[in-house]
Image 1: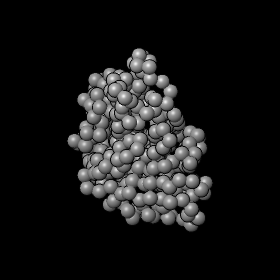
Image 2: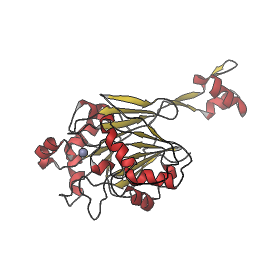
Image 3: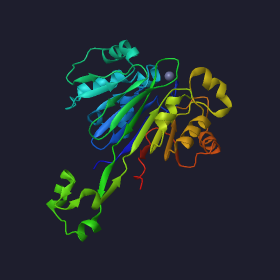
Image 4: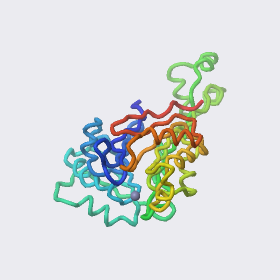
Length: 303
Ligand SMILES: [Zn+2]
């Protein structure tokens, strides 16, 4: 199975810096790649991070501010240039349809890949319900319409070799049991246990609001913006953003296992300040302060 990992393509907020590109992230989830918030320069960052256009199956845009979406033009053209063999589905706020269309048609190019449009409106929606995961979007609190995204893998079952052996079940019979739930008098529950599904949430550009907590609840990995440090909480509130302490407080209350902070304002020079404030807020799980081109594996499964 391909690894499940989160690749940071860019970690700046409004203004890129020498060390931080505009936003951009790829989540590898088995055979699917989800590209989040491609800001300016994402195509180049993909090359540097070893992410191919073929790796992108789905594009999720939280909102149409430039640092989260100006890279769409380049990425969509690259997907077509490389003649990616699968259709690509895009999710974005429906109110930004005009921006989406402009970005996808900002210059001339040969369109050869189907780009499916699945915009989100209202308070949010379930966007994908079958297969490897459920994908939901929830409305956030930002000056323009913005949505956070969450993936949930359904619970599965883990076969227990000792119990299979005790009942003499081997080879193809194991497959029959997994598919049908029963083999003669043996039930699937007798020889397996629940394998908890994994979950991932992406929360970008928002004030604290109920949806932030709902998206983060019990997540294995939460990627969340921490544009500001706590001493600038008034600025964060005014511009519709979070501070490091607020973001970490959400993760603490939600029982998040691995917290990834990103989308840092260019006004701050020491990333360690974000780490310190997250710890001061009482978050004790695994903590990553994002850097460009960093790869973060999803935590091992629970239980
Ligand atoms: Zn924004």
